[in-house]
Length: 252
Image (cartoon, rainbow, N blue to C red; front, side):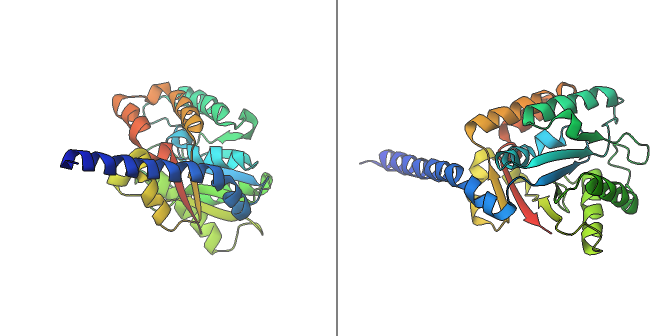
C-alpha cells in the first residue's frame, strides 16, 4: 500500500472514531447532565444583547430544554448600539420561540444605565441588584451566564459575570441557587466548529452540551431570526463557531 493509501486509511479511521464518539456522547449526555443538573429546574439565562442567546448559548438552552428545565431569559439591553433596539427586541423574541423559550419567560431591559456599548462599563452593583430581583421573583434555582472572558471579551458580557460573581461570593443568592458560566476558549478553538469536540471532551468542565444534527439546524434557525445582525462575518460565524454546537460550562 502506497503512502497516499495509508494516509487515506488513517483519515478514515480517525473520522470514524470521531463520529462514533460524537454519536455515543449524543446518546449518553442527557442521562449524565440530568444527574448533575437535576430535572425540571427553573433556569435563568442572563445575556447582554439580543442574539447572545443564539450565538453563544443555543447548545445550553436546547440542552436544558431536553432535560425539562423551564428556561427564563433576562437580556440587559435592547441592542441599540446602531439605533435598532425595537427591531432587535422582536428578533430576540422570535429567536427564543425557536429555541423553545416563550415570550412570557423573556425579559428585556431597555435602560440607559445598561447601554449596548463596549466602551461603557456597567455598574456591577446595579446589575447585581436587578439580577437578584429577577432571580427571586421567578424562583430561579440555576443561573447561566458568561464567564470572566465573556466569550468575545465584550465589556457588557464581562459585566454580567462580575455581577453574578458578586452575588455568589457575598452569599446573596437564594438558598439552593447555583451558577453556571460559559467557558471562553481561544480563537483557534472558537472557529473549528465540531472539530473542537475532542478538546472539549479532554478539558475539565462541569457541564458539556453538544447538539445533535437536528438541534444544530434549530440553533441556526434561531440565529437567522436576527436578520438585522446577519452581516457576512456573522454568517461565517454561524457555520464555523463551536458555540453553535458545543457549550462547556463551569459552576461557580
